[in-house]
Length: 241
Image (tube, rainbow, N blue to C red; front, side, top):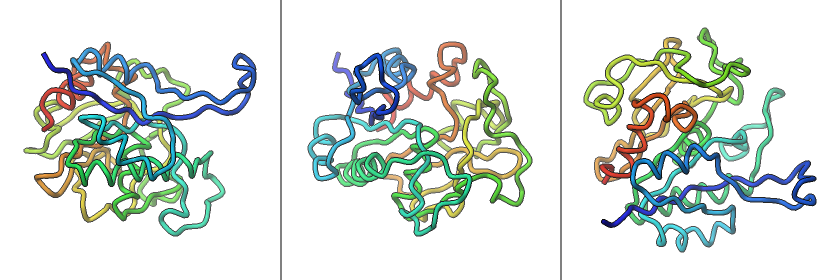
């Protein structure tokens, strides 16, 4: 049986690496590896590289997965950095934007998580709230740290007849660890889930022939305990064509 090769865009750790003799190292959270494996896929890490290599990386995989991590560099959507902006990586942003555009060009499905969904929106022409304090209707705690993500922490409402509805139903609980969020949604995307204070929690492509699914929460943290979260990996790996 052929396994779908899932390219996971990796992050890079480069500070306080005494155990690695201060050498940079490339990594992905283990939950993504486990979720893809459990779904029957073959995960391959795509290290941060020259954006010109994006076409070669995308050619070597069947589907692309973008994970969480740093804040998105605001210059990419023509804003100066807000005082509450967290760490950014323009190298990672630039490479992953190139991966997104190349995956769409090569008609490869894309699944994005948290920062990955925010970057997807920016790559396609949207903007972000650099910090939720900029959002006038903010009422729900979206960064649940230090609470452990063993179960859903806030509610979402899911759009009927969306890709997410058969997996999560019309209402669900999800974990939440973000302080940035989608502001102006790309014209290429449509919202398919919202928190009770109106933050966009999931998106899909407006074009039926472009396979994109993005969520704002972290299924990789709860997929072993919550079958709905594993169903996202199952759907992406097995059915998202």
